[in-house]
Image (cartoon, rainbow, N blue to C red; front, side, top):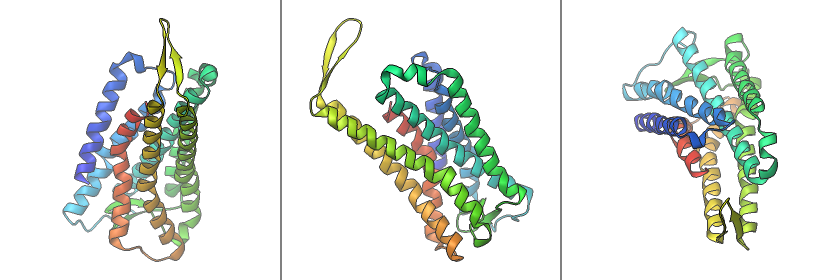
Length: 271
């Protein structure tokens, strides 16, 4: 977890510097990229060090009803959900730019981008606040070394709702859009194409489209590898009433937190 924290902080700081200092990258949808980058940076500065400290020093944990655990659980859920949702909307933006290039500017206006950003954070705040209001619960997990949502039968409705709307839906959206982009790229690769600028036209070879396909496939695989074990473990604990093996629980949580370090590189590759 220590390496994940360092990689997350360094990667997201670098991405933020590049985005803020390079005026060519400024656009109406820049806020979406900044949103998930700041969420991942906050995870790297708060939740990941918290879990690393507990795992390294074999902490006995914290009272689940305590302010520290409740606040840590709220922050973990808020940042986790905002990161994956902001990343999914950034993917929608990229998909629109590629597949609807002629109408892109009319689809993604500054006002719509801000509205999406506000709705994303409103959804994430409501989702994270529900356990504090009695729908769901935060508890310290000894196997994950974190305060996180309580995955048990008593709170299965909250877990299913959060998993479906907060995690599974954006991941399926991203993988579907990446899959369609790969389909278009492979179709285009069969013939290549000509691209024109103000001065001249030039031929884009098929290898360029195939390279883009590899990046998109790798990104989808990365998302699934990081999130599927966590989703599976959480749903197993929720519906079986049994605790998963500590190693599986800790490893799945570590994979999810590691995604905060991988997201900056995913963003760079898909540009």
